[in-house]
Length: 254
Image (cartoon, rainbow, N blue to C red; front, top):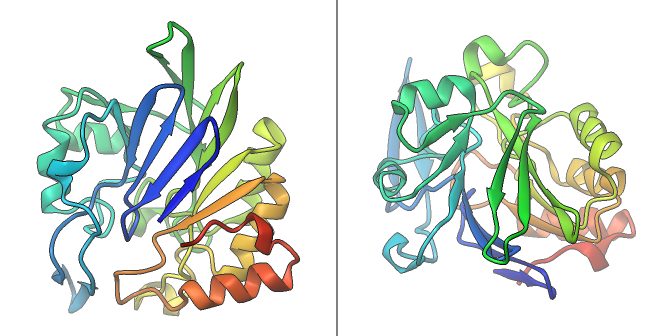
């Protein structure tokens, strides 16, 4: 799937992995390219990948930075994703994730902390870590640290990557600081597991449409709503929700 305008291009490869091209830089989100299979999580919990990615990581070309929302769940960073991290010059992720990844290319960011990258044209693009909540209030001791990302430059459209976030209140905080957002890459799918009595771990489709409205997003690229068994909503639900909200013209699906 591809969303393109003159300055921002987003390719979605299945699951959370997207390639964002902006300002002459190429960003890869949450690399997860393993073949379908099971990932035991302890206590009898299993995450199951149901479909392959649409790209081989060897065919991605050069990556300037990986935007890793968190490293602790295999649907966001799997075996092939970890191998890919060794080949890129920069990995922006959570503070605890950078420690677990052992330094090197990994740089940990706290929410609202920024990192600047030099663009090929000599300009600067700023990546700011956005807060994210991967479940209901109080989930952090079990789920761990998660962040999203905002990409900004004085002469470029603003891009927001939600990461695994289930909180519209945090989306409002992003909108207050950075809105309106040009392109929003929203992790959706209404993920649910046995944790927290099946509470939402990511946005459902109606919440994704509401997030688009909150952000005043011109273009919305949904990601991480397919290829894994723990998603309870998919493509059709997104189309229905954005249609009901009067925002179907903003939804970028192919």
